[in-house]
Length: 192
Ligand SMILES: [Zn+2]
Image (tube, rainbow, N blue to C red):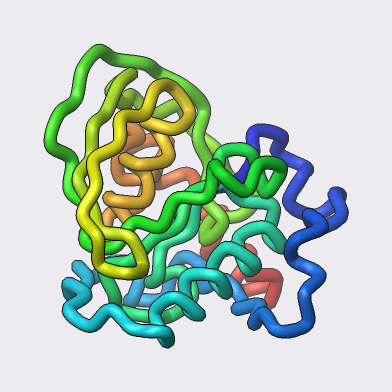
């Protein structure tokens, strides 16, 4: 999920934490790649490699100016996502979600949403205002966390990714088809 500002993905400098040379910055898979529409495989092995991957995902997300990133978006069929709605400003806001599930949702909120895999397109999506999820961290430890507003939205958006669902599937058919047509045109022009 990208940051609030539509232009931020291309104009802002990367957050300081992403400068570390040890981190791998993955290119973001774009809409049209079938991996984005497949349900992911649960994570069973929690090891140093998974911790590395999670940190690389944070770095890749900050580099792309996002507030959430799911493994299919870097081409991996894994039930793993990272979220940081502060965009790297607060290290304590970094959340690794391995095998996340929504266990409680409350209220409704309609806000504009975008996706790093569908750059340049946004749409209003109705999401719960409060969401409680259950997940494991990169070490395999289970935890529950409650999110409100943008954080709740980010949890829902990333868990959707892990189920092979993109935010455009929550839009009206008219709006979704318009976006799909524009992407088709961009692809023909070699700009997607
Ligand atoms: Zn997304």
